[in-house]
Structure formats: C-alpha cells, structure tokens
Length: 307
Image 1 (cartoon, rainbow, N blue to C red):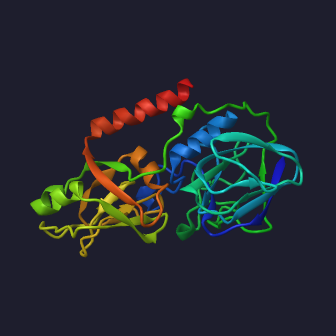
Image 2 (tube, helix red, strand yellow):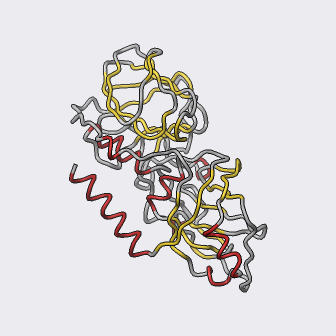
Image 3 (tube, rainbow, N blue to C red):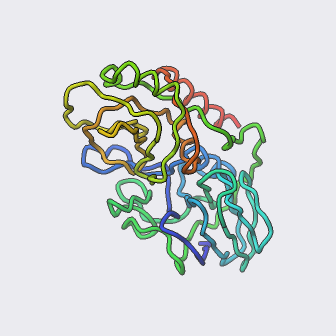
C-alpha cells in the first residue's frame, strides 16, 4: 500500500468518485465528482476503472508529500500545481519520488482539479460509494463525510499503472463564456413569454453563492405564472427558479426533492463544464432535447473507451 501525507488542505478538497445511485428514494443524494469528465480522464491516464476514487481539489490550497515513489495523474483545472516548486500542468501522468511535495496554489484556468492514483484511493464505501457528502455525513476518508485534513494519510494500491498520454484534441477548454445545453422541463410553459425568451437569449453571471449543492445565476428576473407546486424529485443539473426569479443550477450534493418550478436540466457534459466556472463568469443557456443529450453522452463515452 502506497501513501500520500496531506500537508495542507481546505474543506473544498474531498475524495470523490462517480457517486451513489439507487438511494435517492431514501433521501440520500448522489454526490460524486462535479466535473465527472475530468475525473474520467484522470483515471484513464493511469488505466484505472474510470469511476475510481480521486481527490477533487477546488480552488487550490492543497498539498501532499509522497511517502514512497509513486505515479499519479492530474486532470481538470490548472491550479498552479508544482512538484518541489517546479510547475506541473494538468492532463498528464507524472512521478513523485519519496519525500517530494505536490502543491496546488490557486486557479489559473478552471476551478476543480482531479488527482488520481493507481487503482484509485483507498476509502470505505458507504452505500456503494466513497463520494464525500458533508451534509449527509457520508463518504470521504473515514466514511463519515469529512473533507481531507492536514496530517492525514491517503493510501492506494501500489499497482502497476498503464501510463497513457492525452491527445491535445481531447482536452476541454475552460476559457470563454460557455454555452450550456439544457433539456427543457415540465414547467417551462408556465413562465411568461418574456422570461422564456430571456432565459435563452440573455447572458447569466455566476454568483458567489455557489457550492456543491448548487450555483445561482444572476441575470434577468424570470416570472413563473403557473399554479403552486407539490415537491417532486430533483434531477442532477435541474435549473430551479425560486420566487426572486434568479435560477439555481442544482449540483451533485443537491437535495433530493424540491417545490420550485424548473426551466429544465443541464446535460451531463454541460454540468461538467459548469463545474469549472468561477464566480463572476458569464454563461448562456441553450435549449436541447433529451434524445440529443443522450446521443452526445453516448458518443463521448464511446470515444473514451475507444482511445
């Protein structure tokens, strides 16, 4: 068993995998990597199972020291990572010698980086996953929903890695104002005509009120004109509109039911892109169909498996 010693961390640095499934009827949310696309590539770089446990590092402030020689992989945001002071760019596998320190300082491009180890990081599985959900006290290094803390040791199997290189064409871009595909929801017809027009034709700005539960969008006020709603199940990526008319995109640690009307839900690939956006960044919504979203998702996963 190989180990990394955590030398610095924040509550935003957590163990994540693909998340929990089949338990929402119990009131247990999904959790899992916010940018599942980058998590997948980090594991792919080492030949891991694509859903193996990784470290999700949000906004930096994290560092580890190798307790033995090992090979790791990094994908996702550029958080000004360094190995003993030497710059390390994401989207690659790399070696750490015993005693070397890997540090993540601050965002340069994107918001979340994903660090993978051979075979995935070792942690107890709770309801089929080690994904950290602090509110529900599930997952993480001890199974109780705790973030990674200074002084803790993270283990992983000392397995031989199938080291791979990323083709530059596969690397997603995190710059610019992304266009986020949204599958329209059951209540979209109950918004005013002007609101429906504004939703898809005006830019939105990401509010600083954002976490793994949801991200608030600031822009034109959307007016719901339908009847009061009974609470219903909430899908990942649901775009709820509370009474103030400012939408909230619900993410991995969302509640399982809610009573606000919804414009629809972002597609999985758009959610991964949104997870790399910082407060103040502009985004736009683009309507799509469930069939188109499914086709896009299947094509992406088939490409990963082919390469």
